[in-house]
Image 1 (cartoon, rainbow, N blue to C red):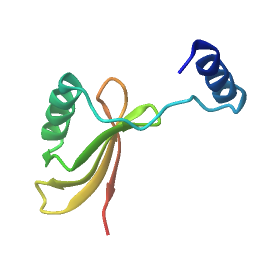
Image 2: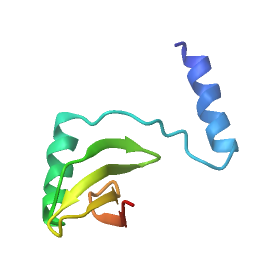
Image 3: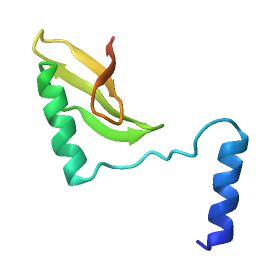
Length: 85
């Protein structure tokens, strides 16, 4: 992708009022940190990814025996924990 096209895509993201975050797989370092953050919540990994500027773990099994979707900020601090139905 050329630099001009990247600049246009970035500008469109800014103009829309939302960052141009893309869903992506985690790096090895991010995976380690997210697993640690999940363990601190009493949960084991579900489907993990980076999306919309935050880390997500969907369908994580927690110590209460229930399944949750958890979201963490860039600092790996818990932002939300929603029970899966």
